[in-house]
Image (cartoon, rainbow, N blue to C red; front, side):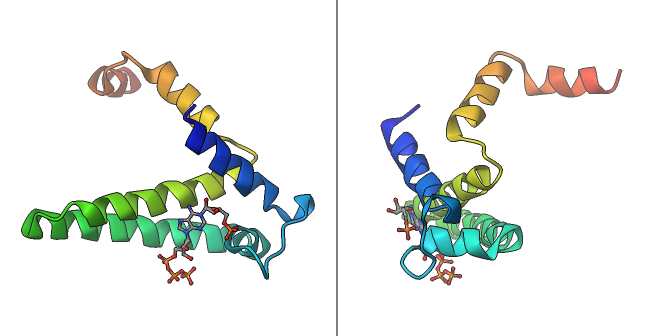
Length: 112
Ligand SMILES: N=c1c2ncn([C@@H]3O[C@H](COP(=O)(O)OP(=O)(O)OP(=O)(O)O)[C@@H](O)[C@H]3O)c2ncn1[C@@H]1O[C@H](COP(=O)(O)O)[C@@H](O)[C@H]1O
């Protein structure tokens, strides 16, 4: 796993209230304190902002907002993973498991 992902995931984990996180001093602890619905709301917002940034970038040619919004989306997805005691490595393992399996073949196999 990338060192950056590992470090950020570690910080997120340390922000859980059970690990001493303080919602008054930490944005992540604040999200954990609010619970599932607040985290899911942020994911919905960031996903929508990513879509809008991509549409805008096609008009303006400025890709920087796509990058910025994807980073927000990845970050909030990491908070959601931590909420379920999952890690970025678990996602990487799932992607590795799928490696080489065509999405079209996988979809066709579901219809059998
Ligand atoms: N990578 C991030 C990160 N990316 C985005 N954000 C925050 O996510 C929020 C995104 O919300 P929006 O863009 O919708 O802005 P907003 O309207 O101000 O947000 P809301 O009031 O709706 O929550 C902002 O408050 C950003 O600062 C992040 N907050 C924290 N991190 C990482 O998490 C670590 C721990 O953060 P704290 O827990 O705050 O110390 C940090 O050191 C960083 O590594």
